[in-house]
Image 1 (cartoon, helix red, strand yellow):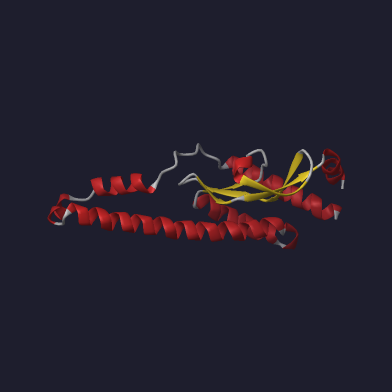
Image 2: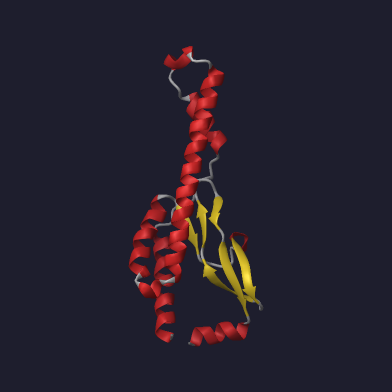
Length: 165
């Protein structure tokens, strides 16, 4: 159990290090309305024959459909990564590293620090300290939480014993 815990902690440290290395200043979150307005403003004048109300509706529907598709895909990817994050002792480390590249490409942020408690749900335990059971995932494009993380409350004594094991 000590070896597994040490291996899990090393994998978590490497993950945090990789995330810090590629961390760029986070852009401002965007919303569907902003995208729709930008697209409508850039439509070539050749489409002036089309009624603008119909064009606005068509563009709005296309953009919202795209956001829904992205949200579904990002949600599934976050669920898969969360499962692999918990099972690093079963070869998940290699797959999780590759998956982390995909998360970065999609601008999906994995949060493993319990201090950002607005993105986590406390699911069990008692005490002052918090232990991450499942990381939280935030879509940097929209600024929304894709998958809330799970925390466990532990007493200071339990967390000290866990660090020694």
